Length: 315
Image (cartoon, rainbow, N blue to C red; front, side, top):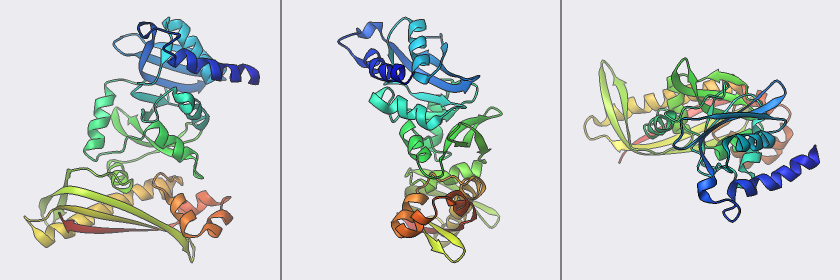
């Protein structure tokens, strides 16, 4: 079986990508794909561009499932332009490594949690819009694999919760550990260093003020403290303060701290998940301490002392 898998790993990329072997008109360009493990087999669900037809196939491995789907579609698969990949139960780390190996799928392809194998192409523009407006992050396959290869072995993916698009904390076996609330979703956007022009609504007394953000920068420190690990998230935020000056700056600082604290509480403290670079910061700050705590890393994350610092400035 190992020999068969090695043969398939060599042969399948050629079937998917080689123009000299397969004419473009004979290819099946896949817009959305989903993969999950069920009853001892790997399943894939593929939806080509400009088609109402989806194809589901199963195999002993992901690669054999893809080979079966290729036969059902009647043309060589091309996943290089796939826009959205859904993942459910299964070895997410191995599956993403196999898809990214040989550029079967683009590292920039967006990823979402879909335990039932359903991925609707209508979600693609919605995800982009919500990410652009700072409502959530939309990790790529490359982002998610990097998180899963870290010590926490978890990632955060867009997911549907009772029809509402939110974020889910997912482990390497495709288990959903938690859904994040709306506040935490927004906070994670800020903590991952995303920079976008957006308007932040803040409360100042009985009045709602609006802060037009023009630039954000996030940085992270993680180092040994008396009782374990200390995590400090620092955010520098620039925007238009001309209308309300100091009152707006103070209210914006409070709001950014609140949403970032919610994100850290629901990912790091509740789930032991690191998607903001805590591991890298800790290794950089004190290599010996980092290496000595490999076995209890998740517990260190869950019990870490967390501080959020925010600096609001006029653009």
